Image 1 (cartoon, rainbow, N blue to C red):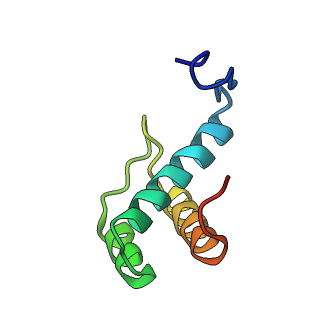
Image 2 (spheres, rainbow, N blue to C red):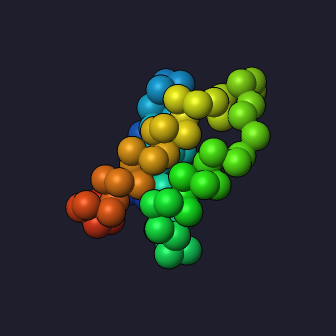
Length: 77
């Protein structure tokens, strides 16, 4: 798969993986046309999981940050 995608490098560091997952989640919210207040509602209502998925308060804040970035700049190349 990596070869078919142009030889991209795998994200192996935990923080990098977390950033990428937050970008994917934020992009999904955008794709479904949710407004920021709706995204915040979903994230505030979602169950926090500390391990193994690390879906904690910091992660949900990161998703909102990525959502705002997409809202300001549009999809990243």
